[in-house]
Each structure stands twice: as structure tokens, then as C-alpha cells.
Length: 510
Image (cartoon, rainbow, N blue to C red; front, side, top):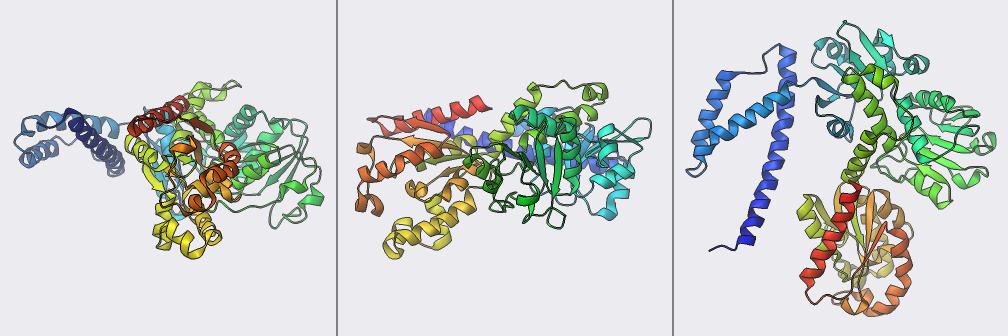
């Protein structure tokens, strides 16, 4: 007879596959509902439902066949429920990395939310289709949305920029700017003081008008704009904006995948106190990392993204008075959504000495969470055609480290992975940014007597004790969480304990 624990593992795997397929089916049902709205067809088609269930029963094996009709009647009812929800979305020309659907699905299950990628020539059709009850708007259509709105709120009217459109029951198109609220929320929760401060705004694109308006609402003293072609540019700003106290990046510079891009040398601003980045992917941009190295206050744009979505969600649900009277201070719905989104976006990255169990832990975490696992040593082999040990032996450690940084730069800025780093990742200062830019970083500390140097040429050459002494401080400085474990007689007991600790910490964040 099969082992009960093994059977439970098998059913866990099947359940994971079922959930993945159900996610896909529900998403497709949303698209079908929108397509039916566009063509005027009824969402419910009883004849097709009967035909489909009959066909599925023919596909079923003898053991599952008695349950297929009952199962699919329930699935179809849920799909129809999802199709019938009011449809909203996010409008843009290209939205490959948008988190808006995730945010709105967390904030409110009462409506469906889609990505609307359209060229400019299709906007007339979108506005007249009746498919969507409204949508959020991103670059490059915010000013166009303002011009198409019959009624604008104050922020939209003052900035000429609309990021939330609602089609009213009265036939009018309402345009709102919830970006201003999102920015103010982000600044207040960060503790960064802008009242009475001199502000330098980077960029003069669609986002900057909203930010300048919000900064004025917050009482900023002097606001200057910097751009590549403006009177103040990225070469003369150190002189023309020498009194800057706070810099706000309203450009996309530093956004994934171009995470190494940077605009300024922050150290040249002698009166600089804080930096604010509207970019939210990665969570710690190069701009933010540079600010923190200088001991400055800093925050990135994820809180703004969630807060503006929260206000938009109220407007989508017809709660205009609530949206206009949101109190200052932290909002539970925003903070809960922010925590869940950060958990989803950030990698779970493990660092520590060679042989400390990082790869095994990463594999277990990936299996439990359904994330993709990446071992940087394996990624090295995929990229350069040799193992890390082979590379160190044939190329030398310096060349290997150069290549390792390339791998780190390619993998670590991604989102939602489980990553096991090589023990020597901390030997290059430039790797710190990649390790920390989009990860919750866990340092796994084990007794040196537990560490094997098998097939580890650096450990053999320098000795485990010497390597640990040279790396320990960086492991601790680069990590968000340090987990120390003594010797376990049973290796499986160690890995189960460590995985449980890591997931407990992350569950606390979610």
C-alpha cells in the first residue's frame, strides 16, 4: 500500500495544478464577458453549457465521471458570476509589467479588472464601446483622458492630467486625478518632510504635473523642474538647484529591467535630506539605494501606486463622497494591499556561507509557495557553460566573480522568485544593490563545523574560518533577516525548521 504522506504530497501537487488552471479559466471568462458586452451577446448561453458538460462527461475517466457534471455546473456558475461583474481596467499603450490588476483584485472583488493595451487610434472605439464602466489611465494617455472628460475633479483640472475615468449613469464621462492623493499618502507615511523645503522634480512628463500640484498642497517652499532639455538639466542642476532639500524622481529611469540607470550624483547636493522615487519596480531602485548609502531618508513608489488605486476603487464603486473625504493617516485597506503586493513582488533570497543549505532550502520554499527557484550557481552554468567550481579553476576567481556579477544583475532584479546565492556573492560591493533591490534577504548562519568544502575550491584554498571572518559582516549588513541554527542530527529537521521560520516571517508581512 502506498505511503500516506507520499499520497498527500501527490494530491498537494495536483491541487496546485488545479488552482493554476482555475486561475487561467477565470481570467479567460473575464475576457469572454467583455467580448460579449462588446457584441451585445448575453453572458449566459444555456445551450452551450449543456453541450459542453455532455462533452466533458465523455472525456472523463470511469472514477471521476459521476462527479463531472456537478463539478462543472459549479465552475460554470462561478465563471458566469465573474463575467457578470462590472468591468474596469488600466489603459496604456504598453503595459507588460503593470501591477494594477493585482492591486484592484486585492482591494475589491466586486468588479473585474483588465489590462487595456491600445494604440491611440483605437481610443474612440474604447470610449464608445460600453464594455468598461471606467478605467485607470497611464502614460501616454493621461492628458488625452482629461480632454475627453465632461467633468473633472479639482486635481485633474489643475494638472490637466486624468488617471481615473468613470462613465456615469447620467451619460457623462468623469475624470479624476488620484495620483495626487497617492503621492501625498506615500510622502506622509514615509515621514519625509516637504513642507517649507526646496524640491527638485526630475522629469517634465505626464507624472510631474500631478506631483508638483501635490507638493504645493503639502506646502513645499520652492519647486524646480529638471529635464534633459530644460533650463535646469542633469549637468547644471548641481549649481542651479544647489539648495535642494528633497529630490523627486518622476521619470521611468531605474525601472526594471533597466535597473542600473541613474540620473544624478546625489553626493553633490550638500543640503539634500531625502529622495522620493515614483518607480516601484524594483522596490529599491538605484536612486533609492544611493540615497540610503548617504544616510538620507528615501521611499519608492509602491505606496503611491496602491494608494491612488484605493481612491480609484472607491470611485469605480460609486463611492464618490468617500473618495473625496479620505482622512489623512494610514488606511488599513491600503496597508494590507501594500504588504500583500510587496510579498508577491519581492524575491525570497538566501545568502550565507557555502554549504549552509541555501539551495535545499530554496527548493523547498519554491515547492511550498509555487514560486520559481533559481540557484545562481546553476544560472552561472546556463550562461557560461561551466560550473562555478570549473570557472574558478580555469578562469581564476577574479574572472569568475566578474561573471557572477553579470548573473546577479540579470536574475536578482526580477520579481517573485526564490533565489539561492553563491557564498561569495558578498565579495563584490556592486552585488549589494542587485541582492537587495527586489528581495527579502535571509542570511542563513550555520556552525562552521557543519559546512562542507567538497567541490568548493575557494573554501579549500582559503579555509572556511578565514572566509567566514571576511564575509560575516557583509552577510549581516546585506540581509533583512538573520536566521542562526545550531547543529542538527537530522538534516531534514534543520531544513524543515528553517523553511518554517522563513515562511512564518513572510506570513507576518502578508
